[in-house]
Length: 542
Ligand SMILES: Nc1ncnc2c1ncn2[C@@H]1O[C@H](COP(=O)(O)OP(=O)(O)OP(=O)(O)O)[C@@H](O)[C@H]1O
Image (cartoon, rainbow, N blue to C red; front, side, top):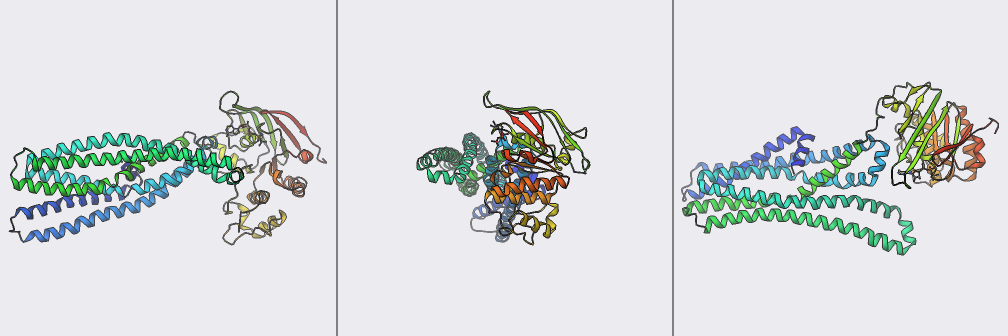
């Protein structure tokens, strides 16, 4: 709850200040309304002429200020959804690739899809809580004025109610946090099941075990923790109410010996207070879930920010005239228990402008990891990368990456062509689509998007290649691009496209298992078990 308040105050300070002022006014006026009613009742039927007017003004002002406070927070909460999502996406895009892989995309997705909505749902409850606090304060002051004894008893009841509420809510928060942790596992399971629908349709036993047992087990833990947490919060609210009703009982039937008009007046005030408290308490579970979700999102953002990527510096073209990139003693380790730990390197090699370098090696030998180091997506843990002798450090990382276009095995074709320099030239786009035999399946829409990206894997890879050609960077990296192409297209790729790229002065790094085309490169690096085990140079005629 305090976290939600702080979040709102930080994300929209002005609106938060307005909402607080209106919330406090709404609460105070609500209490003022009770005072007016009580004064009317205490007048023994001789109602002062000003009281009905006062009543009308206080009613209108109380309802209006509360509504305005909530309207302000509704506006802010929708803006804050956008902001929260954007912040998390920025945190992910600003984190090192290894960090993103460690945190896991499913966990980020669960925060983007679920947590943000829970936070946004909770925020409109905040003005009510502020109004409730103001209401209780004004009521307490009024009771102290009417009868110090009743005021004191109310103050003790409030303190007891708050203490009980906090005791319950600490346990409730613990369970809601456990449910939040389970939510990540649930999203991972959802992802596996939705992406594995074909496999699960073919194997009824696995479907029963995975969907029916493992998924249910995770969902059950999530359900149990959520329900326990929310029930504890209901208990917290109920214990607060019980304390209030106990106070009423003591005032009405207890041994305080108060005059009857004081008892009737204060009981009426307290009954009003209980109904107002009820309105606040209905928000408590929503607020609690929102607070836990906000913590969850913060946790993701903090985990991502532990490894900030240094590649955000502006690109000025300082490496534009590069000739040689040297990778000197570079090294990367995937941590894990002894037999799961993978060490790549130390590796020493160079890339020259305008050459075609092929990389081959057995599965799991480290080719893709090397490809991430080559483009600067992974930074070497040891060793260094230098462009014509200038070391690639944090200052130069964005510059360095801007030399590359890449199609990794888990590539993405975006629907929009925005950011691709050649996208504005429709003839050029059409030429590449025809060249890669996609023109009958895909066209460029006038708004700069592809008409479709629902293509076969091989076709999508060809569309990704069109994007690389339009991006027109100095170095093209292909991670087993030809693996999903038919023999005709393999031939086009190795015998026509690579030589053409070379002719245009581009450098190509291509990971390949196609040994019959090894001669299509100027050089072949063979990786085995994380080390370069062989390098062959080919004559241009090969
Ligand atoms: N994100 C990761 N976290 C931990 N270990 C990883 C990760 N990615 C790869 N590895 C491990 O690193 C090793 C090298 O993987 P890599 O993908 O680089 O090999 P590869 O030569 O490209 O394999 P393939 O030819 O099958 O694509 C493998 O043993 C793999 O288990």
